[in-house]
Image 1 (cartoon, rainbow, N blue to C red):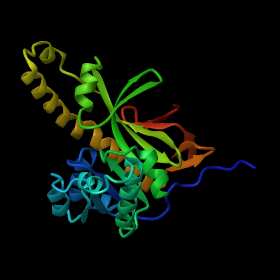
Image 2 (cartoon, rainbow, N blue to C red):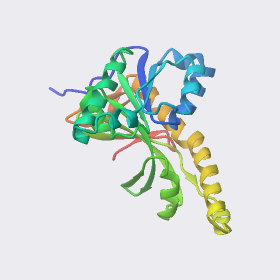
Image 3 (cartoon, helix red, strand yellow):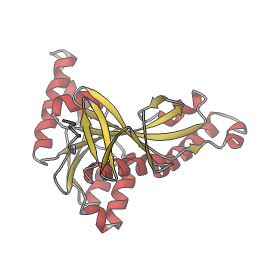
Image 4 (cartoon, one colour):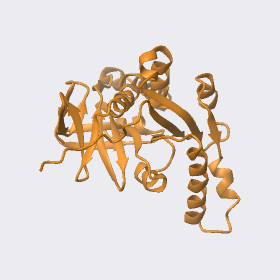
Length: 261
């Protein structure tokens, strides 16, 4: 008997909690779309947020969107536990984070540059964790760039056409879920950069453009796939439902199709 995957999360609406450090990256676009499209809020509910930085710049933005944000400053927490090993202190910190998240009752965690690997969080919290990263794709090979310097590092690594990739951590594995449309660099402008200040200005401008054109739409696409009960697993492989059939692979936003990875 052929056993097909069952949806990863069946509850409606999808209840997601956001983990971040300072600013929101992919979730800034998602919150904006949720704010202006009533249909999305019936499918996706951001039940709460948590930051590891006491003066995180995104706290006020979340509160304006009526998303409760909890705070336990990671730096302060670890400084108070210098008498124990760093590994033990980090474990205690994540345990405190979990205590806060439990109150939101999420079925999915969104890792928006929280500073911890998504697989580590998925194991600790016993919940699927969704992240969106800058990627460079060449054939079947994918290079990921993460963190606040992702755009800068990709440019310095001579990557010239960038995309965003949504990845889902489940158990001990990370699975590619979706990729965004491509966003090419302005090579003519880059060639005319005269100094470090001009380069940093270009990086900042491109990073903001990338956030709204690639990262955010890719995160929203991934959330809609999960909320629509179109994501399932079989034998530790990810499947996407299309026309009542499950297909192994990832969703390509450029072609609006599912591709084998």
